[in-house]
Length: 144
Image 1 (cartoon, rainbow, N blue to C red):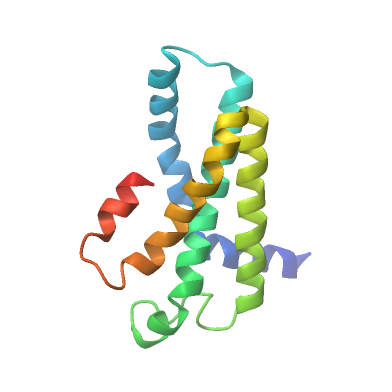
Image 2: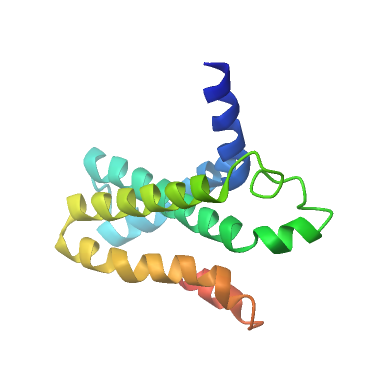
């Protein structure tokens, strides 16, 4: 049991789960504006699950893509993706599980959300690579 708790803490550190929680009010505001009022408990739950899985996906891709860069940076050399607490294959599984969760949640919302889930994941994952060659990478982040 202690090993599971430690691994959960490592994944929490990998994606900074508290930042995901911090972003939820902004997502709720967008949902209320888009729905022109309260949208119901079902969509509230789906919004939470979509936000968490999308952010976990994006952070997983970012940590996976940057593990060699993070190893050379004193500020990031102790992250779980670098120091061996989480293997590259575990990060890849984490990425896939969160992508599938996001797609599944989108499917449960409606057909348009499902269709848009694929390009959204491309944008979310693309940021990690776009930032390597463009100073406009934060525009990609804003679009996502």
